[in-house]
Length: 578
Image 1: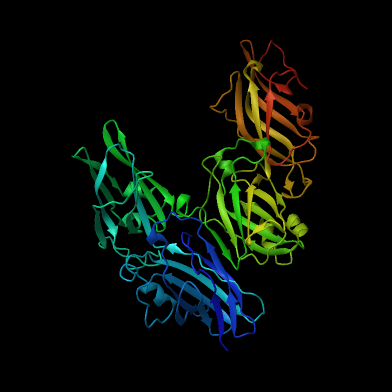
Image 2: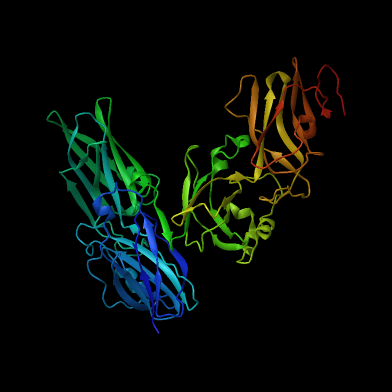
């Protein structure tokens, strides 16, 4: 018996990072099962060649043995893919392929032969998406989708020089070949396979003086590329040459020169000379896609993440406190049990550069619409118990599992979280959109010392800090009290009359600060006399009755009106002990 899956709408989407997602394709007991796959590109500003999808070739392989199964062509509307029966399969989707690969043996054979420099339809960009499908005979509506990725980088030129008319752009050292895979064992990684491209005719966008898509170029490793971009033009008929942009300029924040990445070369006039600067951006950012939404099986959740501020009590954060090294989302249905866990959602670590910068993630293949609860967790390395989460986990069980313990001062990156609710009415066209400002599971304590107090701290210890946290629980956990030792280093951003010591402690919340106190060790100056001193400052006496997560506390020492526990040296000829 053959199982068939129909694609009723657009099969492919542009501008997504290619990756492999495992899907359960539950084919049912009938001969044919229809699957709705929809994609919202979200903009009309793309170049035609960037957007064009004419035909897709699907290469199917057995996941366990990697043996070749079949090659199938499909159109964007109403195409089909046929599986020979139950099992696990790898499906490679190749867009805009001029000729299908013949005589394939296995998956490795496919990877070694999928070159793009001589097998793309004229005037089109080739793209690739890959999916792993588990085909069963359970009667449910299946869902299958592909994330597509262009195999080239794009270079635009933005002209900001008045009266400068671009006449030539020449790119040398560009790779002339590429595989669908970036494995450096592939044969195209050879410096000898470079070429020179020259453009003398430019289609200018009159709205912003931008020359779009001047070059499409294959990626190449930094060590084997020798890229150089030369630009010429005229002002009042006089030719001007722009200094060459070389390989180091192109690398930017990407390593190596990467596919599906956009490079904007901006021409500016500086001290009478024309200079070129280069900005590297993901192709899917900005007006290129307008934030594409992918809706497999018509159900997806789009989440806009912010990690910069949190609540007003933590309105200003240091960059390291905003770093997100890993990100996961746990999706619970209205009945309160786990529907799906989305882990490893980031392809690279992310630190927002400003308070307005967010990160958009899309949760695809959501089983159903309706009321949902999302638990968004960042930097969960400390929460090792999350490995015990299963499909039967309830929300209460999840909160109990998300318990963490500390043995000392916490360090960045900090564990962050957010609980987000979606109502049954919060869906539009089977897509739900939410925003989430991540909250840190820790609090921060800073120190501020009045210069007139005469005290200079050298060591600060927080005695009695809480060692445990339930993170998402409404009440703070109670753990064994621990002592935290802070790094005492005055900030360069000094306030008039005060020395600032930020980020002394990161600690978990506690319902009561009773029994918690600071030990401040340092030197006390009085007149021309100086002595070593240790001060004890209970938190409860400084109007800190509790410690709440995601809150920054500043302890101010204006006047040393108590006596030191221990004083050494000589202040006015007297040593006092308490």
